[in-house]
Length: 163
Image (cartoon, rainbow, N blue to C red):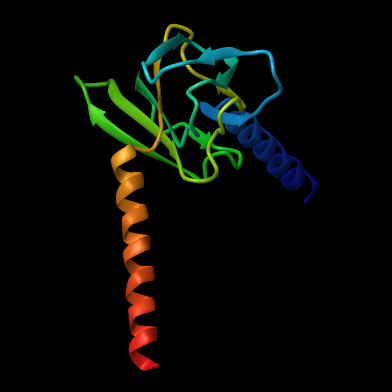
């Protein structure tokens, strides 16, 4: 019986070690001392990296898109409370490589002057990431505001009609 337990413990340890080696992308809050993001132009990084960025766009950064070729399935992702969720989309390119986009979105985002770190682990050292910051479109903000104003006016007119 003790041999079975040792074997089970060994298998569990091996599976945990393999899980630790899985590719992952983590975005987290950071302290000052960073690379500035001053416009919405995409930028690239190669291989596994940990880098801190500062949002100097003047508005809250609400989405972050990472695009790269990746051959072995879906990496683990975590927006660490900055972004509520991430969505991974695949597009085949050739027989083995796939074009992969990871979109971090939702949540409070990165406020103007805020800092965040991107950390990638478990990827090929020659892998090239294209990173694109995004902010809400001004048109969608106006549309949302006008919808809320319209709903408020409708409620006000109904309230007056009842009185």
